[in-house]
Length: 183
Image 1 (cartoon, one colour):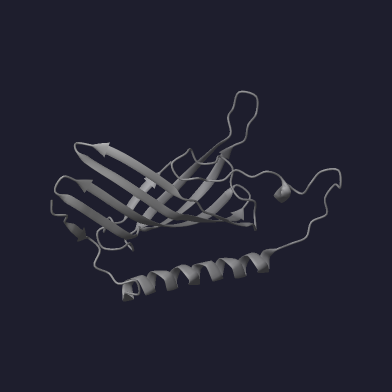
Image 2 (cartoon, one colour):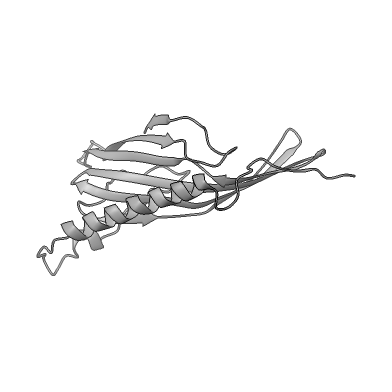
């Protein structure tokens, strides 16, 4: 039996497109960090209660319902994760690894945050004719989240997220189009 291996992404690890995306990402991170350091304020608090930022916070994890709460004003949160999936359908077995599932969230005001997300994909599809592999970065996701209501008796806590992906991913992984969304 002969095995066939195809690489759908022909980009080298340091292609000009990848260097540009990474540079833009780091520039955004540095700008947000500078804004956070500039905006930090010390506020007195009741010693019997921990400060609000020290209390438990909800994380926005991929593939599970997003958190209803936003990041506190002036706070920066970096979240990450790893997802492994295996599917078998129509004679094809797919093993997918998604990492680092990075999400940078910054609270601009009370109840309003901006978001920047980046992910990479490594996927292997096996069938009787051979194996196909796909590796690369996915499109950058930009978005905002606005808290709408807080929990009060019968009114649930709710928020709305507006997002879009920018076609910055690797060839074969990118959607090659701006994709808007709302949650």
